[in-house]
Image (cartoon, rainbow, N blue to C red):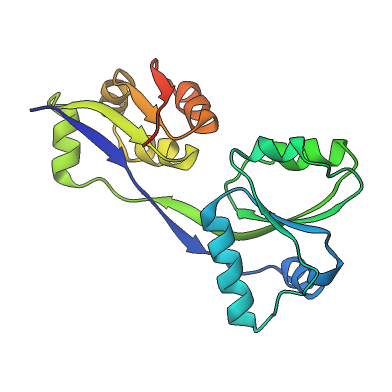
Amino acid sequence: MHKQLDMQVTARRVPLTPAGAAALKRLASYDLVVFSSKQAQSFFMQLLRKRGIKLPPSARMLRVGPRKDLLHHAVAGKRILYPRSALAPYDIVRALRAKGTRVVPLVIYTVLPVPLGAGERRMLTIGKAHSISFRSPSGVRGLLSQLSAKERRIARTLPAYCIGGTTAAAARAAGFSKAVVKRL
């Protein structure tokens, strides 16, 4: 029986930098707080609760996905606080700044791979896995970092089903010949 190998990741809060703490103190000065994932929004709200910070009544929050959707919003000249993962690509920050948006990235969490179990590794090496699913680019990197060179060659021959375009692009860049976007 063939199975799909589902690469899991876990998220962990990271210490807030002094610049990050200062950005939170100026929360009322931002026109918009933007999240590109549910996790970013969840970690941000936890951070506010932990620090006893209340959202100002004027606070506007926006969650987009994929993150490039933000470029379709009227953000030129706006001041945006962008809570994000330490591993999130910086491309959206550069693109927003090019449009005249003042973006303050706020790194609040990171993503780590969940180690493969012995059964999952065996399933991969003996040919019982028919595909691999990825929910983030860090999942792609996390899987490959756990595998030997031989296991990576095997994994890259399997179809990679990815939650979105950014993840599929990361899978292709990592050598997966068939990386497609599929609702997971």
